[in-house]
Structure formats: structure tokens, C-alpha cells
Length: 274
Image (cartoon, rainbow, N blue to C red; front, side, top):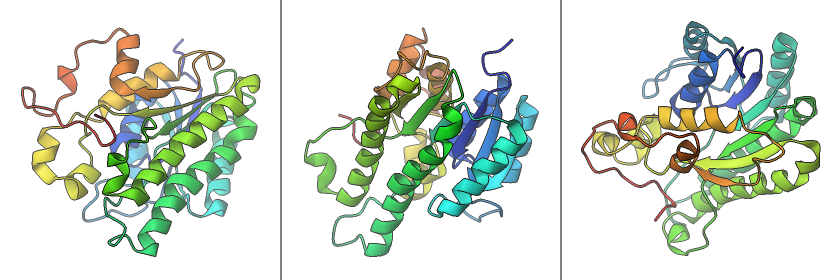
């Protein structure tokens, strides 16, 4: 029987992009997915809803529960988790994927944007994890995985978009804090970040359009890394600031060309990485 058969994962922002790719990979091995996202109606610039994602997940071989969840609103987090537990009876892992981005400097980042990034990236990640804890404690394979970059205090990462940078580094600090806090309870907590840009709507709409997409990798590289991480012993595999390539090398994968959107074109290093 597959390791993932019958296990349940709460994935924030799972209606598209990296979150959906992770959901599909886990579903292909028999996992149950709680699709926690705001996308209940189609958006002109963003493909997919929680319902279209659920259909794809079921087709991939897993079970899906599409549930509206705006992680800025604690009540919707509580309701989404309750609905997931009512349907599947358990939560074995949390993927903190939902995130807001604005690569703007101090003058160009109004309070509304600053607040949005901190409400989603930091507060939302914190509250999702907090409310999943009672169920993670009951699992013998409990993982908290937060999609955020390795900590690096080089001022160049703060210079151009300090509000976004500190919100993402805060996510990593949460992960490291949880690794220490929950170690005795056997709950793993790690952060994960891609070595290159990933071909998602955010890259296409905010970070460089089609040209940047051509220099990116597919979301499947992150999904494959998550697939490996969640199978590791949570008592041992914790407290790490992971990169997708490093994880896949641990898994014995050395050929990364298959993930390239345009093989042969030079890849774009992701933000926060030299």
C-alpha cells in the first residue's frame, strides 16, 4: 500500500500553481486533499477554482474536499479544518503555500499591500498551523511544510522590497520555531523554496511574463520535493531550510532537465538565492 493512502493534507492556496501541483502529486499516491483557497469563481487572469482543482485531484486518484478559505479570516480557517476532519477524519500534514507578493520598495508599498502580505504570509500561515495542531498531534507522520526561503541577512534581499522580504523570512522563522517547539511531539516543521523561478501565474503576471516563464521550471519539481519530504521520519527530518534541488538529490534524482519549461534556455535563479 502507498505511504500516502488514506493520509490527509491541508494545502492552502491549492486551487492553482505550486499548491495544485503538490495536491495532484500526493493524490496520485492515494492521499486526501483539503483544498483550502478563495477561488470559488473563475478569475480572468488566474486559471482554476477549488472545484476544478478538486476534479483534477479526484481524476489523479485521490480524494478532494474543495472548501472556501481566506486565511486572513480565522473563522474560515477553523471552518475549513472542521470540514476536512468531518470528511476524512484526520490531518497528517499542512502545506503553507498561500502567499501574497508585492516587489515594491518602501515608498511604493502602501499600508494595504503591507498588511495583505503580513496577513496572508505570516498571520495566515501561523493560524492555519495553529488550528491544525490538534490533528497533527494524532498522526505518526505529521509534517508542517512552509514554502518560504532560507534566511539570509544580506541587505541586498531587503533593499528593493523590504515588506515582502520580511514577510517571507517570517514564514521561515515560524517553521524553525515550530521545529523546536513540536520536536518532542514528533511533528516535523521545515521550509522549502525553489532554486529557480517556477512557471506560475505570479511569475507570468508579476515577475516578467512569458520571457521569465521560458526560463523557469514547472511546479512539478516542487511537488516531487514535497512528495519526498512528507515520507521522511518527522522526528528526524525537521528544522531544515530546504531547497527543491537539494531534496531531490536526497531522493536520488539528478536529472532536472525534465522540469525545465524550455530545455536548453538558461534558468532564472529564484528570489533570495545567490
